[in-house]
Length: 134
Image (cartoon, rainbow, N blue to C red):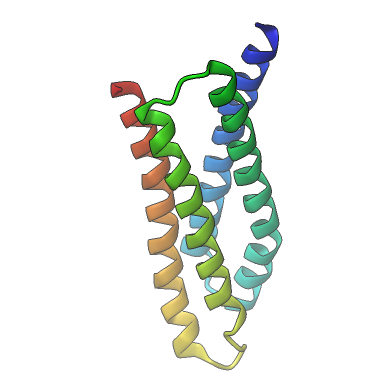
């Protein structure tokens, strides 16, 4: 039983850390006006983002298999995690092709990434709310 408790705690704390990374990235996109500085910061944060998402998926899998039940909440968390993975990859791919002299694309990226991070945070909050209801 102690294994299950530590897996649940690790899962929950990792989700909090995952949300903190998203909030930091949203804050960075909102406050930073220099695209090059922002791109370097997000390039540094992207592997941390994906590592944290992988830990969330891994610990969630351990908890789900140990519980031996498949609930609506688990069915919702799987596509949410995959969605967060894919949407962040798309954001990164869009960022990495923008050159330092393409100011119009840089401005478009600021708006795009604000929208992406808002969607990511909304997904985490929605999954949390739905998991408490069901």
